Length: 253
Ligand code: PGA
Image (cartoon, rainbow, N blue to C red; front, side, top):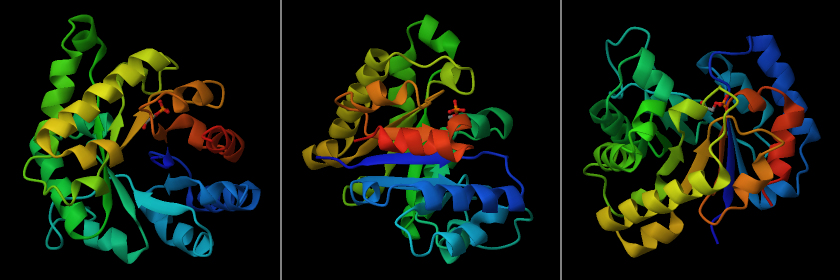
């Protein structure tokens, strides 16, 4: 059985004091028993990682970054590396989010480099893939996802693949209130699992965690999270309030 992973992607939201308040609210209100069975992750903006590490140090809630640069250190003004994220206690990092692809011109090739840097530094990369509405309407979604998954995971060693998390986030469902139907999402998750099986090995197929992301909230989470191949959620808007985030976590079991 794969453990569910519920991850909050705060994006560019919450000042330091707001982050402090939200982190305290999550850690004070979460049912600690659920953390024995569900992996929980919060990905605040970089400036709040240090305080998140401090507030959550005695809890089972993990922290992660929303992006990294593809080098470990050096003269890259404004960037943050995998090595720097691990130094503030991060266990995960989101890479290749569609907003990064759209606004910061990230490609499958740069995402692949980021996956490699993350793994080298013991960070689990959450590799985001997803088709646009146009691509789905043109029925190119399976082809696009296969291309994204295989390019982003190029030259990744079979032993490392179980430390990679995939997040299927149809671009048309992100922040739009339109969720993929549970059947549409599950169909793609099964497809991604098969792609991984062809690239790596049978044990990877069983173990790899594949999250769904795109307007997941506390109303639709339960059905999505109980589909056969959906192993958790990458949650944007609904992770910004402790009540809805905790409700989603509670619906994972
Ligand atoms: P959303 O964002 O839940 O606000 O749609 C998900 C994401 O972009 O990771």
